[in-house]
Length: 309
Length: 307
Image 1 (cartoon, chains in turn cyan, yellow):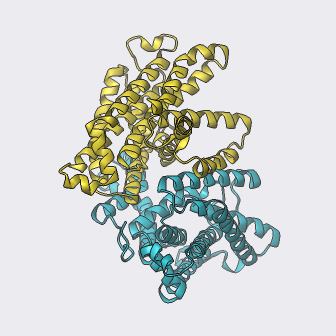
Image 2 (cartoon, each protein chain N blue to C red):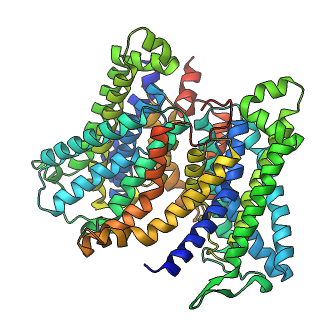
Image 3 (cartoon, each protein chain N blue to C red):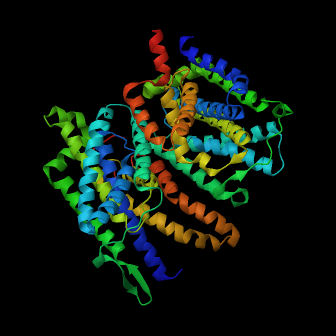
């Protein structure tokens, strides 16, 4: 494989990693702070994408659509928190899995009923559409670069928010011992609601910016949700830094695995055998990575301080 | 006996089902009930892990895949003897359970959930890569296993599945009440205390994990024979999720739970989907209501009434 192709795959891997980070950040905070397994987090991503397409159709302006989609996604998340999730915080994990799975079934089908089962497409804002010259004979999408930039900016902001502000301090304290934070007079219910709404909005944002490059279809969040869980478990639950590193790692391993494993296998296997084993092994790569990490470090790479898994 | 009563009533109902289907529904209904019974067998085995051991496996459908593909590949290659197929299934299930169990059981809580998911997904992608045996599209079987003439009888397959369901239910019920089961239940409450008392909790749990895997493997082999079709989707994570739903729906760790859960799951799915194409719009909220308002699943509804 040529070095240009490798460069493209590297960029694609980082771009996937960034998207995974935006989804996984909310997941790890909700899980770390509230001990709440939210399978419906992937649906928030899907909703974000659909709302962006929908508002884009109405306003004709990508920025406005993005903003409206974020607000609507936040409103939906707060409603779900109020109506369903709030009653599950002190239940065991199994109940949470079951109820949030119910939310997935409902919203996936609702989206199918409202917008139809066929995938929708949307183009990025004009000044970021198109491609630029990466090397002499290869162009790369500007929008993907923009996603990477946006992702790193959000990661930086999030790091600032969590480590340098009062609300971030409460979130970190909540991840270590939520009961103690409540006993010290912090309104823990409100803190939970803020964390939940914020996390869901990040997932919706990921959906918005992913809408121009992936097909917008019912169930689009389900596969990414499982990958996001892989990310937070590898990174260490409740840790933003761990999630960021793990997201990039998983994005790169997945993307590079899919493009190189078959070729690597061809070096010492029959081509037909390599063509058969390669794709399977590439799909497995992130799970093998996770199993290996968990085997040696059951708490993940960067466990949040003071937290016991 | 009270906690077992709903299951016993369900068994009597199931035994009469082929007769009842003569009047209403015919082979459509018996096919549906066969699927429910196989699901019940798989859910019983998962409840041994969740209910008795407190281990939430999110990759249990892997064993369904092992059983189904063993049967599918064996029949395609011309080995149709049922005993041979079940023997190979059990052998592979034991091996897979020993290896993945020995690794997974080093972890606990959410890490256990995720690592079992990882093993399940690895198997799912392995099955998808079997291009000689259908790959992603799955494998259609042109005949069933040869069960010494048993399947040639009318409803032979139905009563084979029914018999296995009852036998496995009895076996797991005895197991739960045996010394072995009590050690597992105690370790679920407090594994450190059991270790201190001198019990090798790891060994007990690994044994339970292997037993659960073998039973789910058998359920998989039955699925292949019932549907005469095998596909990687059998071992996808969604299928593992379905199994967890069945166990929770029926009632975790309750004697009648998995059987009631499986029947309710299949009947709800079919009933609602015959009502409307968008049945998930009803099924989703229904799941939420069950979790919020019926703690302990369907089995607990019966128990409360009797108490």
